[in-house]
Image 1 (tube, rainbow, N blue to C red):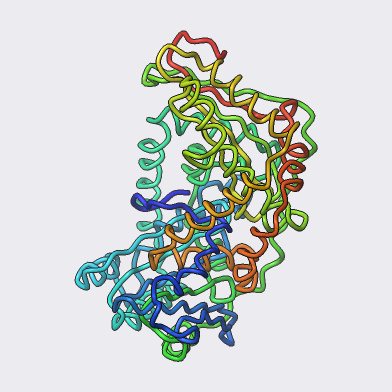
Image 2 (cartoon, helix red, strand yellow):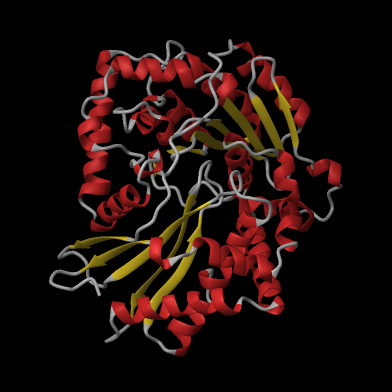
Length: 457
């Protein structure tokens, strides 16, 4: 994910749907109806989600476009992120900088981010400024002025951003090369910010075509979370976004499919700026949208059991018991639109070697595949997982992110509502089965980030 400025949490995975439990905990005096999430669609196709949260007179207003870097035309990498920048340029009604100035005057904040699947813009402001934010966002949804001067100047900005964020960072460079190896054919292997040589060629014609195709109400989701009610949001949305015409009807988001992987691969980067070696091993696995029933939930819990925190197997065995690792963990992005990565990683502690950590992580994974997990261990993981997400969701912006990311990638409000029960239904056999089915060392892709003159092992 890239952002105009630092943003703490990436688009949250489907797991954060446990947030549905949050209003009952945070607002014991409220009735269910007060906190009911509502969903409706305007006549021009704009989807709207309203998430009441009356703890403070504040709203988070987010507009999600169902387009990310994986939807870019061939040879135009970076244009989705380029547009994240261009959207802060002016319209005929609102000159460049007017939105930033207005939000700053309100004491609020705003930002935007691009992922492989979505591009989103948001403002957190006093509740009585909601109409003003809708006016700004609706105006730039179809009224952006894209002159040659605007395109050229902002292209220079994103090129410099790539130099600073990627070219100057060994970790970022390795991550880019790693993704390009993990994905042999799918556009998830292309960096969100774009390849430098293609970014340099982006022009006004590309920008106008991209804007006209994707920035339209029928390709967007509006999420309003905070001190609001659905009737007010509907009225304001119809008066602003509702006045826009539909854009072109877009075809289904069908992307290139990965071939079957039959080999393992490694990507190694040695750099004098690296002090502690580390490794990451990944496999392509299905996501909530593409998995067979129960598999994505089982992968989420597998990630938690193996490396989700201080109670995980990796941490307890490699950090606490043997002390060979400074860190060891696992991760799974179940919220992606297409098959995504399940990863395990680690770094050594003291005089221990990276090979020691790698062998320890592999041994723990092999033990789980061979012996499975206990019901007690799984129940504990479910409890930690759900509790963790509830605590993480105690923020209005997270609530908006959860619903926005789900609806912008093919999910529904009902999917979110059902998610906690689906997690609770996962069995030990399902966790063992997804580990055995997908985490085959013979087809893993491994990256090594090393100090100079250090062997990969």
